[in-house]
Length: 145
Image 1 (tube, one colour):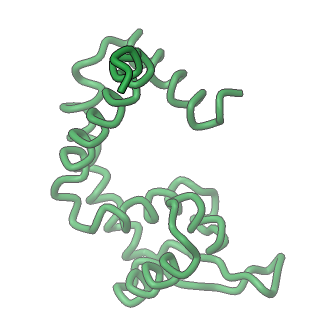
Image 2 (image 1 turned 180 degrees about the horizontal axis):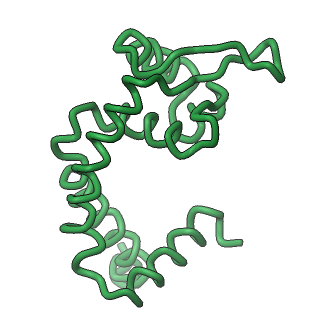
């Protein structure tokens, strides 16, 4: 192996990103009252006008295959946190809709999540660092454009 590749700044930078995320994820998802995958679904629906998204769009947003997301949605629907409705714009598609019980679960989870974020993520950063991190993460998310 080439020593310079092992110690390349890009390899180190990515490693730090992965290590930071791996350390922070369990801390900011602790004691949410729902599994972290459920929380991601509830959060996406809660932040969407009308609290409804096409099932396929929601699966993509939370990085699930359509089959995996269908099973997840089945469990969340059984827990009465979401419900499925026909998409009025496409009769072949279905919407996932946040239920009142889902809104309550999201409110409880967000209260805890925000406290964890403020302790472990934004708390250690200056306002300038937070703005820079947001800009960097948006650039990476959007594919560098």
